[in-house]
Image (cartoon, rainbow, N blue to C red; front, top):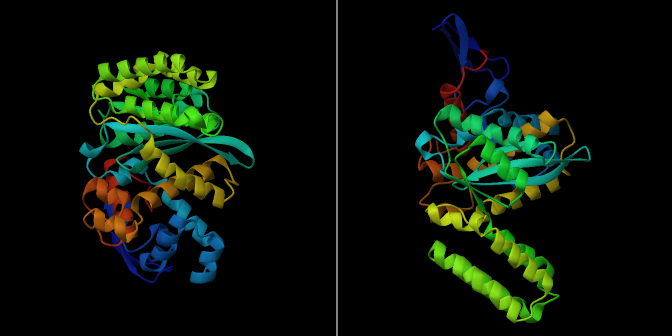
Amino acid sequence: MKDIRESKKLSIVIRRISISGISYTIRPSFVMPYMTGLVKDVEKPLFLRKSEVPFWMLSYAFGRNAMYWYRLETALGRNSLVGTTVRNPCDLPEHLVADEKHTKILGDKVYVATTVGNGCVLGASIATDAGEKSLVKAYSVFKDEAQRIKPDYNPKTVNTDGWLATKNAWKVLFPYIAVIGCFLHVYIKIRDRSKKKFKDIYDQVITKLWDCYQAESKASFSQRVRRLCEWTKKASISSYIMDKLERFRNNISSFSIAYDFPGAHRTSNMLDRLMQRMNRHLFSTQYFHGSLSSAELSIRAWALLLNFAPSNPTTIKKHNGFQSPAERLNQFRYHDNWLQNLLISASLERFRGPPPNPL
């Protein structure tokens, strides 16, 4: 034990300890990092940020200024997404979904490399372009955070939309991972160009396509896809639909490999639902207006708020009282207050990782 001090910002007594000659401040979970506020005063405004309430509205309703609330939220992005969200290293997901969200920083196009597992956003890093080198760097943030809490972590599968640079990036990071093509994207490519233009035959094609998806084995899946392509040639289907189905058939191995891994994601539904919220968040802020580092902190903070902020009451009741995606993943919470639960989880990640800078 080193000494006791009084915080001039909050007028509360805090304790410092000394470890190997380095002094550390012990901060209670009801106090925000760097003594920027009390959890009871900022918890509701930060909860509203989950629904993209602007900072100026928070300032109008709860006082302070808009920059105070912006800095308070952005500061959360300094924490590890994986280490904060996943309590037990054994709960790290074996099957992932990954994709890039197109967005802008000061008008320049960038990509948010997003990794999702077990209903939580576990990776959100910005790549300056959609090339393999940039995506390896962006997705490696997830790998580093995951292996910090479980050094031998190697996921079994990742579902992607088929972008070659994305597939190569995951193979570079995890050489033994199985990259699964997203079946949903095959359907979307046909739907977007055919639903209205070829509506007389569209329903039949889509019904047969989803019948392929329902196949119970790899052999049955391959057989149904082959028969679907043969049927399109006999039924005089448009060349556009035939080309998409033929490409699907030629790449069938990237879809059928999912049968070798029970529990693997065959579609990107889980990620798409979360990316819809990301899209609303980015649109409401009119994308990023600062530097690359500030944009990274902002999107990481959004991900932690999404993982820890309470869901609607119906969803909470459906999941036996677990309030947030992080609680449902861990089947546990440290505190009934969601923000204190987040802060405690973040501090434990620091314990598992390198020691923080002393205050």
